[in-house]
Length: 520
Image 1 (tube, rainbow, N blue to C red):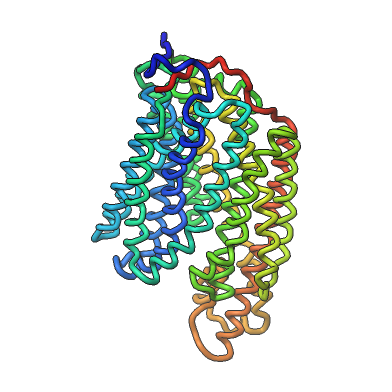
Image 2: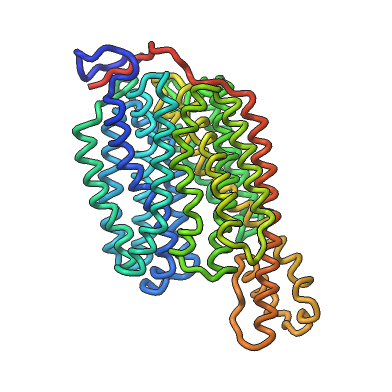
């Protein structure tokens, strides 16, 4: 049996005692560090490839290793915050993330870089659920929507600045500098957090359900690994199917164990609340549409249009900047209209934006992408803010860290699914229509070169070569990629409409103040 432990005997029980706006600022500094890292690494990859003599597979692991560790450990990290204190776990995540960033910048081999990126993902997992739990404990229930709106704006600001800062650093300093920049940001977050944050813990120190940790970690690893490898292995490949089967087996064992153990890692009662379950699905669908679709726009800008990474970041600025404006508005609207109308309306707007992007042409100008980007910002912001509030706000206070882990895990899994599934759709469509776009020139392409041309078309690249035939091949590659991109956005449109329908079944977070969170 557990009971709440108060660090500060003078603090009255209940929510909304944790210096709300100072708490928001403190946790935002940590999250800014993580968000910047997530966007600048992709820009640094080409230079890393040259200087560390990395293969394409190595570069994939620079990203996938981090995401894999993050996705596997998020729910466990949330539980650790619930047990040992969210402030303590948050600051440990900040310090670890900054130190591993420093070590990455000093890496002399790609193997060391990948290993440190995995470690960085573990520290990132500690940081994110604890940040959401600290926000929930600091803000009164009636102001939580406003806090989540500000939270979304900060994430939008970080996303907007990431490609620009990364591009400037890579082009004018070095690839190492995109990791070194986390050190001063992390130091500021650590110092300010030590002063501003007040500890919150909903349970006394207790044993960790280590068997649950093991079963969930193996299940999540199998799932994310299958998603990451499916595009290269094939969805029907025996290896992909084996890892998906292992996901089902270990997931079932985890559910069985959680229903039997006295102090479960993830109490199944959390999902008896329909809004928590639907909010989790909404987060998956939102991330599927957003990350899956956005992933291919970088190929559109750099492959088809030939833009630099910095210019690509500037082209996507309307969406990131739009989130800065849209997220606080979303928080206010959810408070006034409730989550059903606001989230459903946001997904409908997102569906419209996705549909508009399914009509993009090879010659699309800045305005052709800026308009749907702004719509997407005003559509996805209510979903991000609302689904987060639904998951964290409807969970029992003593499970706020676990709920934050569920929210972040849902986003990671949804993003991985979107990238993998939409990637398969785009690639298959591009390969299917390529012969038609080649026309008579198809007869001049040797069979052994067709596979290389299909690979180039799947990412909108122009195959190497010169002369009249090279121009024909490049045009065919770009047109084939655009056909694949259009189909990918149409699928994202359908997913967004499905999420809009699901949103009609959610309700707002709890408004009660009786949960035993004590702050010090």
